[in-house]
Image (cartoon, rainbow, N blue to C red; front, side):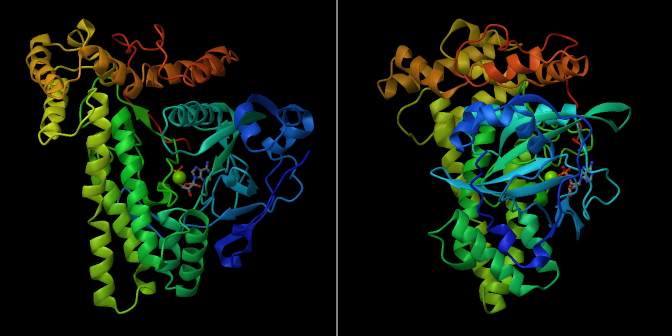
Length: 472
Ligand code: AMP
Ligand code: MG
């Protein structure tokens, strides 16, 4: 089959990566192929489904024109510095080019690399299915994200707390260049590499940006938009380490992520996030922290140090304003409002405060605003009612009828999101060799704005999954 590779990252200096082929697996088995994404990338889904195609998706064959390599990077993990991370269980096969532009094709779970440290370089089925479900749901929700092209099983066991079936995810991304990629070279005072990386990222993602400061501003803008998007759908990334922040502004690394059921700003799911560093409401602040690391890494390219610090600081400090603008626009739409008004931020915050107090389901409350079912989301429906009076007055003030607001609300608020208990149920069934719930969930989430009486239900008592685990 035809693969249109043009591997620009592989043309960067050798110290950016280690060239190597994936480690073959025992028995590749196709779990799911994203046929529509394959088509969008000019790949033939039929050919990809044959044993020869699946061999590529499992890492047993390297397609013509690929230049497989493990990328090196560093990063701050939970605030602590790791001077060398890198693709420990992933390999970049190469970059596909076509009318869609240029994307990375990456195998995740493809075997050990020089950056595996103590890891085995493998992934088990659970995290692979989780990333497939959630990343494709994010895309359908309209948020920038890496994509899932395929999931395959390996026929090999992966040892974690117990033996699990091994799997490989084929991931598609604008690139896999992270804040941590810049940090890696900055920490080594490798200014030449930093300059090459900066040029590469500008050419690839931000052709209009001028120099390192232009790049920094562009990444600030992209991340502000992205994280406002996360907040608007109740997404908690869970592991916003600097090595998991894409400079292309895509959601990347679906390890311990989860969506809110009941709204509370302090919600954190990840088992290792003891102190809630990456809790829902902390995400914008953490983004600023991460962007400050990017800014620091770029300083050596920005001329005289004092002036460079001033300019870089100013760029990072733009985040709250840009984020706030996106956040307001998104939440206004969620309330069915058509025009901006001074006090809208307070109106939105008042609802969120009452939702937190009343344990209201995030997705269902917004989706049902203006209907009797909205108040039923709250343990104290009266708290909803007094807020709704103010909201209805606000709608009347701009001349929006409830019917018009309802129409906007249904366009802005998804009916379904990948609820954590559903994701876990799909994984549990797959471990028992029943992939039907995984396929059903994945397919339903392609139409998140369509009513779905089964999947819109919050977890029942005892069904809620409040803890998630990194996909290692
Ligand atoms: P993550 O938590 O997924 O962002 O991974 C952090 C770092 O650990 C990255 O450098 C990964 O490549 C590495 N890593 C995670 N899981 C494994 C594994 N099973 N084998 C080797 N390296 C891994
Ligand atoms: Mg990662």
